[in-house]
Image 1 (cartoon, rainbow, N blue to C red):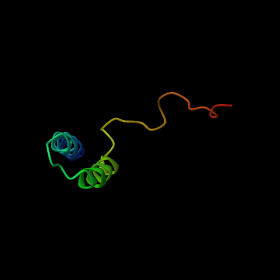
Image 2 (image 1 turned 90 degrees about the vertical axis):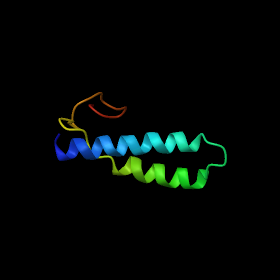
Image 3 (image 1 turned 135 degrees about the vertical axis):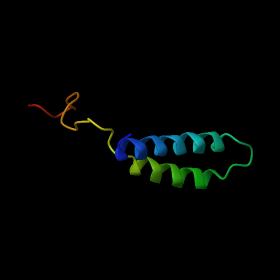
Length: 62
């Protein structure tokens, strides 16, 4: 597996585990909010992902 693939998969697993923790009784939701934001921001782009592809957003493509 390529290094970016491993990082992406590991981060997604951690986000899933954090979501499960958030649903437990007595979970520290301030912790969940701060860590989930950081994890989501640290997600590497998936291999082969092109930021220039995809739908045009409103105001683009005029």
